[in-house]
Image (cartoon, rainbow, N blue to C red; front, top):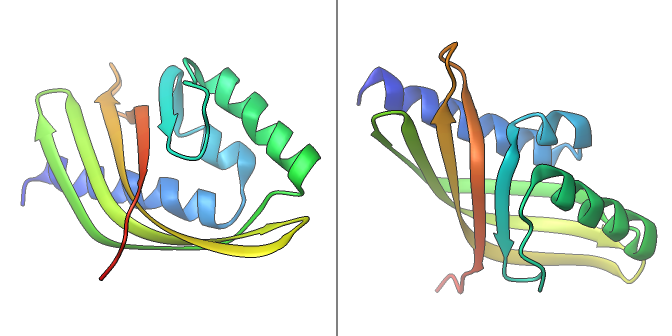
Length: 132
């Protein structure tokens, strides 16, 4: 495995750890301002980090949204120049005003190497997954 692949695995894992800890500021700091987001459970295409932050705030305000746990496995990384692709499967447990719920999903996070060498996420795509 190349050093770049190892870096993508590390930064991908870090994003998941921030999400799992419900560390809102730390989680969103992993994304470039122009990052885009597509989630199966949200009808809106989010065309920026700010747009997603607004949706997250709505979830918290209206639904009592809180990340309780996120387990990630089958992590993979691929690097193509200054683009890194992180994929994994995850099981997430959320708390809402309606109680706890668990979901199984697959996720792709695309990273772009910044001029200083840091990797920032520029796209996140979440799909439902039926683990059998």
